[in-house]
Image (cartoon, rainbow, N blue to C red; front, top):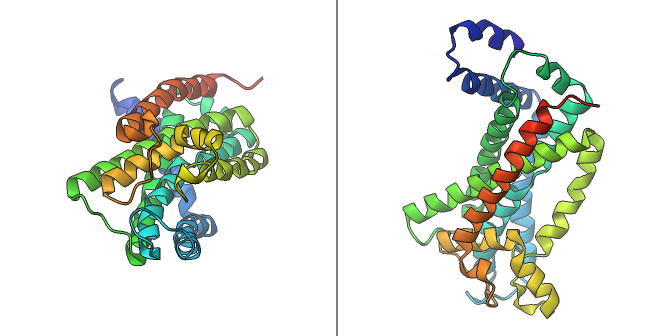
Length: 277
């Protein structure tokens, strides 16, 4: 990447140069993934396993408003699994922590490139990779019975919303990776993601939970993202219990995403530009 940037820099205008440098950084991340077939297999295989295990194990035990059969549950579940995949900040957190721990971040800071180029490149690459995983999970969902009911435009809006959520939490992960600075520690924090998804409407409606727990679950952003995607795909939804975010799920998802991007993009760029103590 260093040679590419330094070779291309004299021909670039100040306006286009940051974008070119960010594209080079994204290409670096994607190239590293290409040389990690085991990691690719794990990343792409996990969504398939999630769809099959949760769809068929839970599907035979949970009744939904949309129907008592397992196929109704899979239509309810699969959009939630899309959100679980998009919400996960761990991949970008581990990647950034690895670069910080191995000194790659310090070397990038020494290059004559825009300070924001590397974080933007990594965010772009991680989002593209996440979109590929999302496509694979959608194919798996179609195989097990998940369907789109509200037309192409609504489905396209749902996919756009998922990519927005993926991009948002990629930035959250990048910032946390810089703060943590150790790959092992960042990997261990992945155990915190699962409880957040369980305390939501991803796997079961929240109406059966105790009142205090239901209130937490209904205001959990993961519940809001899931409700928005189900609404746009036309899949079975869960009771909103009067919670404003669930009753306005698409709007609430966009507000959450914009708020987090406004907070974490500048925080990440500033943290990235600051030399390690």
